[in-house]
Length: 102
Image (tube, rainbow, N blue to C red; front, side, top):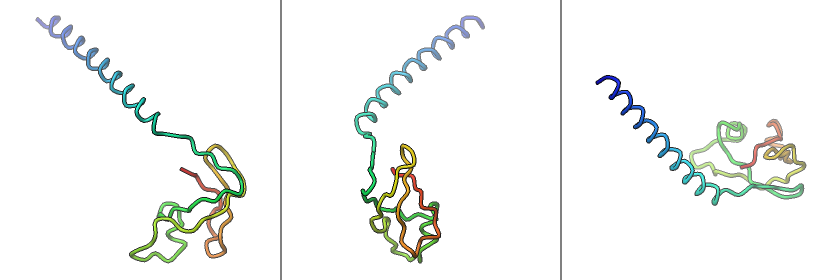
């Protein structure tokens, strides 16, 4: 009886794993259709997102209705696939000028 139970359980686990692989593959195909690579060139302009984790929110006066994005900033150079150096204004020049673009 114990051996039968073990075999049934093993079969069910394998069936569940197969179904999970199929579901994962289907979801991945949906996501791949929507995701497009972002590529910026020098002299393009990007918005800077204001959050407490980036430090931008701490560098400017945070108020109750602070905008989510602030100003357009020019890209000076591309550092990597998703990292860019931008030209910052003097009032937030104390921040690191290399940002991840998403």
